[in-house]
Structures are given as structure tokens and as C-alpha cells.
Figure 1 (spheres, rainbow, N blue to C red):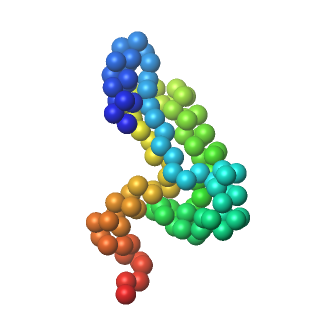
Figure 2 (cartoon, one colour):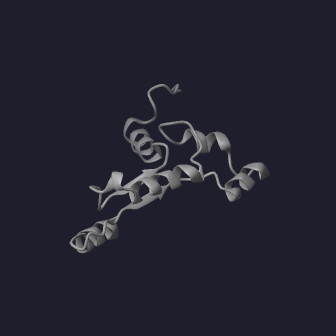
Length: 105
């Protein structure tokens, strides 16, 4: 993330924007194979984020497409997580000891 910020500052004067995309587990053929073999739990992957879903390659591609478009011309020096809220949920779980709707025993 810091390299993204440094490059954004150094290259911005030339009209070059620099951003990063930080995906989580992406439902790629490799992950699908691990799920099929029983090496990965699909419910654990879907449930790790704030939004229960699989992150698919097209989700990552759509963020990259946006960042490359004129719609993002004022955005530079950022890292955008494409993680269905996994980073937020991890921090929340660490701080609060779980999610409020989960039953604690």
C-alpha cells in the first residue's frame, strides 16, 4: 500500500494515477478445486467477510476497469480491497469478540 502511495505522489505530476487492488480469496479454478477436494470449506470462505459471498474474478476486474476509467480520474494513491468486507469483519471480530448476531457460548 505504501508503494502505491509513493508512486502516486511521484508520478502524479506527470498525470499518472497509481492505485492498487487487494482481493481476498477469489473463487478461481484453483480454489474451486480445493473446495471440491474438501481442502477448503466454502461456507468459511463465504462467511469470512461482512457480506456473505464468494469474490469472483469478475468482481476484481470490475474494480480495475473502474480505476482505469475517467470516472476514477480524481482517485490516486489508494488501495481498494475487493474482499466482501473481510478486512472489516476481521477487525470487528477481533475487537468485539465476534459478530453481534452470532450466538456466543
